[in-house]
Image (cartoon, rainbow, N blue to C red):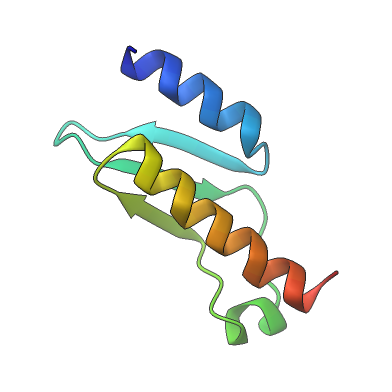
Length: 72
């Protein structure tokens, strides 16, 4: 699958994030909205990265779980 297709799929799956792939080949995501102090305290990050699309999905799922634990 092309990286453009991976980008589109991840963006649909995680609409609150901007997804991109760097020139170095790393996969990145940045939140659209600032974090609350409670989210920061729970370990939420504004930006996450991974080696590949599945790794990025894993990072984003973890971030969703952290945010949901604070703001159900």
